[in-house]
Image (cartoon, rainbow, N blue to C red; front, side):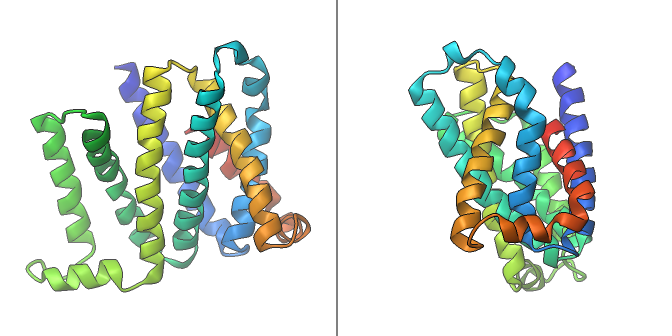
Length: 231
């Protein structure tokens, strides 16, 4: 049951992180937040990066991890933009789609099967989202409108879709290639810091503007980075 404890603890830390993110994003642009957060998370991961067994990591695996982290970078930007502009009650219900998308992609790509109990759980998630996002139970058009009328919900959908692919990539790297979880987390955070540095120069003209923007919120950003690394 250790995996179950890890999963519940991860969900708790992820939810706590989202709440603090929402509060912080009211004072800082989503792009700047993402850039600075990637640096803070990389700092937390450094001990695992230096302690990892680099001899077990082949060039192909490095490239695969880099691709997974790149998907995670754009997924995080999408989710963060949605989180900044939508109520936490709305985003929390949308996040319930994450397990459904990941399970579906795992079935299609990895051929993993779902038990009746797991399918029942996914059905309950879908029903919960429907109830939360509509006031009139039998008006599906209202539900569809509520889910698609805002461009920020689309950002979250896009992010969750990419996160589904990163979940499949995580499964392959951790399960098939048996990379140590802590070392893998550190590598992903290191690659994310590199990618967000490039994003900063492309979209913000360098690191000065994001760092200046995040100066007053650095304590909250480091707290979110810690929670993100832990979950």
